[in-house]
Length: 472
Ligand code: ADP
Image (cartoon, rainbow, N blue to C red; front, side, top):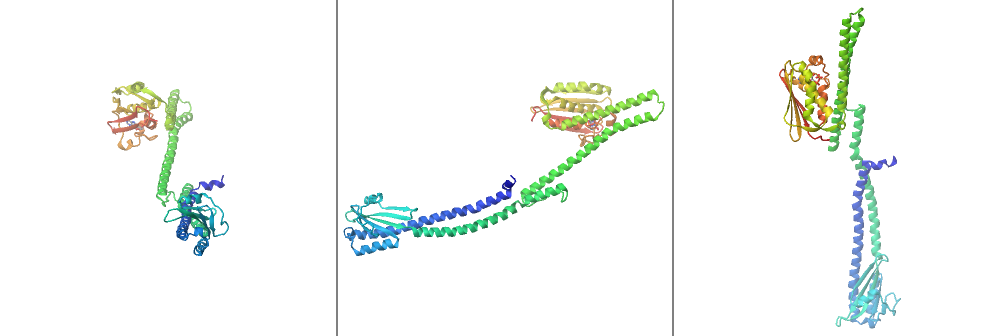
């Protein structure tokens, strides 16, 4: 298997391709030219013989040679014809009898071949037998006065000389062909190596980037393609670095957040243990503080778990057709007690009935966070307005409050994990800094969007847009 691996390499394929492209036209040309030569040589030979035989034929008729084969003039010419073309000439009279054979083998014998019969009907026949290497022609001898066919001249000549030339040419072109093969192979080898070299460079550079032994960015600009690959690779590396950094930050934030309640508990417990005869009230007070810290720790862990769940792919969504009006009513009903505690007016305004394909649990969590924030970061006697509207594609939830607002700089960061715009206030009211990260993830999983507008000291508006039909 390993031995055949080179078959898959680009270098090998370029080599083969170049060999084929380089040699195929040459081979086709060679074969074509040889064939053309053969055809042309045979046709020239035919024309020559035909013209000679016709002249001879006229003389044969004129001198009545058919009836008087001892005529020297014609005999000499017949000999000449068969000598020049290395062939045999037969003269056949109307009784299908051979009256003259330049080989003197068949004189006096009868001959009835298809060609001869056809020629007696006036046809001039010529046949090339390439296997046995001869051309055979039968020419009718016509009396020019009576148009009567008196006899047939059968000329059969060898094409050995043509074949010899053909072979000579073939051998020579073969030598040239072999030289071409070697040349094209060398050229193909050179170019196939050269063309794939940048790819090897890329692999080497990636290895170097990975081991940190070379530059920390890829730059192979030999081709536009390798340049694009380098850019894409560098972008990916940068992204991975950002992800790695944010992961580290997240881990350190988590540790810090989880440690804070533990530290408080330890301080509380230590101070109780360090005192002797602690009054019961102090015990109770410290224990209730410890319980509060445990509660806080619990909340952070729960939020982290929700976040981890949301981080998974959208495939984990549990999509159902849900009445959004009812969903919001329920959320507000649950939050009413907290709002009442701070004398905050909580109002829901539904512009139309809306049902949509959503994951009820996840979206409830997201919207609850928004409304809860609007209550938490509000002022005494403030208000929170929640409204629901929809068009043909999306539904919109707007959560507006008359609260403390978020300054412009913090507005960019509020969706980050553990980010708190108003640190002291958030911690005081038990915020974990994870709420909006959870909300945003849940909305993005639904292919939705969230936007925030705020004015410090005046209030904040969050607008959420979710598609009515879930797009997988
Ligand atoms: P937390 O658990 O601290 O509330 P969130 O992620 O829900 O965390 O919110 C991040 C920060 O954004 C909060 O700490 C708060 O400072 C700010 N914030 C969120 N919602 C509001 C709002 N409606 N009004 C003012 N500030 C807000």
